[in-house]
Structure formats: C-alpha cells, structure tokens
Image (cartoon, rainbow, N blue to C red; front, side, top):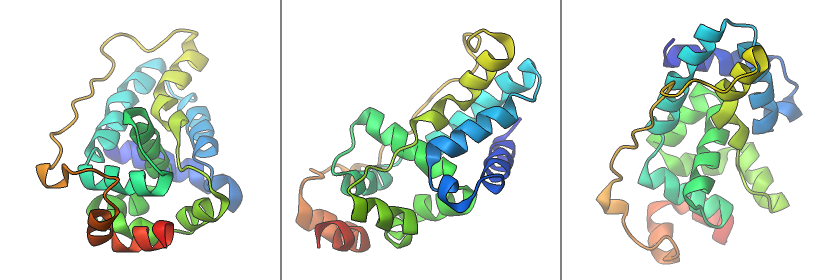
Length: 180
C-alpha cells in the first residue's frame, strides 16, 4: 500500500456520504474504517504506514499556526486531530492547505466552524487502520505496523502563536476571519 491508496480510500468514503456527513471528519473516518475492514488483515496492516506518512507530511509549523488560529489553540494532540480532519477533506484540500495554510480561510467547513464556535478536528482518522484491524481480527495492530517520524519544524515559524500581529502578517486571511 502507498499514499495513493490512502487518498483512494478517502475519496471512496467521501463519495458514499452526503454533503453534511462529508463535513464530519469522524463520519468520513467511520466510512473509511468500514471500507478498509473489507480488506485482508495484511492489507489493513499495510495501510497503517501510508496513512501516517500522509499525516506526517502535514506536520508543518505553518499549518500548526493555522490550526492554532482556527481552533483558538492547538496542543500536540490537537494538531494531530486537526491533521486528521485535513486528511478527511480529501487530497485536493489537503494539498492546498499544506502548500498554503492560509487557503483554509476559504473553505466552507472552516467558515462554518468559525460561525458555530466549533473546533476542527478528526481524531478518528488517526485510528482508521487500528479500528479496521480490530473489527476484522479482534486484535490490535501488531507492534511495528507503522512508525511516526515527524520532520523538523521550520524555525522561521518558531514564535509565540499568541502574537496576533505576527499571525496577521503570516496568515492574513485566517486571522481576518477569526480575529476580525
């Protein structure tokens, strides 16, 4: 399995949901889990690493800053959950956000979350392979099924994310939406 398989599964899961459910990362994750559960245990285990490769590729300081603005803060776990949500949005949205985190300001889901005062998160996406493996075998993923090696964060983004002036300079669209 590779990252293309991850995106195919995300696309298939999203295509089987109505518009409202597609906006819910946990609903997308549940559908991904159900679809992955149709595969063999070996295929499920093989899916875990590419999923984490996709998640790891979005481990970026500029995207963390965007998550911080959107969710009013972002702990380590909170950023993981945010990246899970991002994966559930599909490859196109994910790619745009990784290339330009400020582009998230134009997403209806982000605008809706802001209007409703909700956090953007998708914790269940992180455990799709885990949950599918349990559903099929009754057992957890085997040890070593995947590794997580986060890249070094860009030191140019090593500043206090509570510095609204700096955030406005770096993420003007998001800060305009969330800070006014």
